[in-house]
Amino acid sequence: MKGLIAGLIIVVIILAIVYYLYTEGYFYSVDINGVYVTIDSNFLGIKNSLHVSYSNTTISAHGDQDITLKIYLYNNNPLLSVKVTNVSVSHPFTLISATPVPSEISPHSNETLCIVIKTPMCNYAGAVDIIICATEG
Image (cartoon, rainbow, N blue to C red):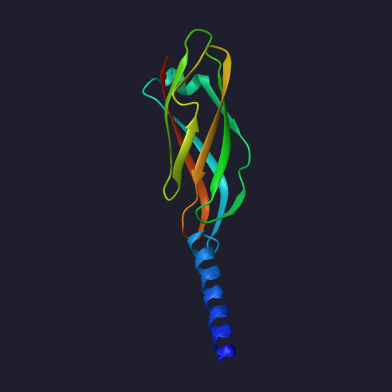
């Protein structure tokens, strides 16, 4: 009888561990093999004057994990400020935060956007698209 109870306790502990790993996304593999940033603006001058750079374009994670990406923006327009109004990411990722948004980038100034995305609860291999909406400041 004691052996049966000990066996049931072990089974319950193993099931609890498997459930935890499943709900935390450890059974899913997310391989990001590219980060693509697009500037979305109705003003052609903004698309030409806002320069974007970033790193960490190959990332391996598990499902439901937060990933932080830093996007560096430089406004090389000598006269006009650029206002970053919104940031979005492609499906199946979820945008958690994008700071500092909204923000205004003065002429010949730079800004670092810190973007946090959540990985999907499924196996995924591919790129993530980040869309930055901007307008005249």
